[in-house]
Image (cartoon, rainbow, N blue to C red; front, top):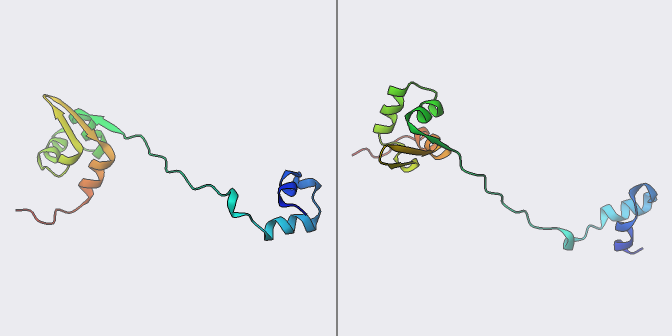
Length: 100
C-alpha cells in the first residue's frame, strides 16, 4: 500500500483497513506552517470618534484625550485627530504605574 496512492483514492472507495492505515501513519511532510494574518487597523477620527469608541460624551472624550493615557494611539496633525482604536482601548485599560 502506497500512502500517496491512498491519498488520491476517494474516502468512500477505501476499505476500513486502508482508512485506518492512513489515520495511523500520518506524513509530516504535507503539513504547512500556519501563516499569521495581520488584521487591518481600525481608526477613529476626531473627538466624536473617541466618544463613540469609549461610549461616552464628547466632553468626557476630551478629558480622556487630555489625560495623556492614550497619547501613543493618537496622531494629531493640526486639528485632525486620528486614533488607533485597538491601541487606545488597550492603553485606557491599563493602570498608570508611575505617575510623576
